[in-house]
Image 1 (tube, rainbow, N blue to C red):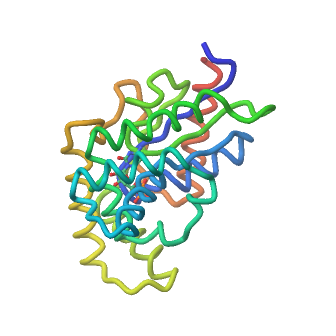
Image 2 (cartoon, rainbow, N blue to C red):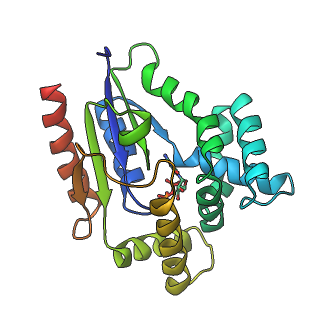
Length: 221
Ligand code: CDP
């Protein structure tokens, strides 16, 4: 048993899991890691090196290099937040050696929060199933494809990026299929995950529902 709490949050693109995870971490005073950013950064490293994220050798080379020299500021780059970066992330994320290269960093983060911090919140696709199978609380956050596409569209256009609802929905459907259909660590709820459907919930209501599940789970652990 670990001396600190681990909260695992998984779910498909734009389900609201990132906002929720960040807010839960802030509320509880826990450390937070958005693991999707790691895959986004690997996808970008492939592009920056002139490679193709669809090619396994390019993806694995970039992941292994990236994992060796990983710095927190690499994950802050706004260029990682575009839909293209999300697509590239999901292309590199299907390769087992890419996932393997990023595994230790995530396990270390889960195992060792900074001094004085009582827990960690991590969000992604495989946190409850692969990275932290013994997490104290597992949440699987989901929402309908229409709702998720609308959220992502608003998020992207608010940042000044030009796109259409149709393009966002097509991207999202393609990415969901790739993430759920891959052989290694596919997107799926852990057996002991609490499913939270946020289709009908705004950000505050989703946070209240998630916090109630988390507090109950932490009491039990
Ligand atoms: O924010 P959004 O949900 O759109 O995406 P993200 O969490 O940043 O993840 C981008 C991509 O990285 C996903 O589509 C997955 O293919 C991959 N990913 C993964 O395979 N495993 C994780 N733990 C996190 C992300």
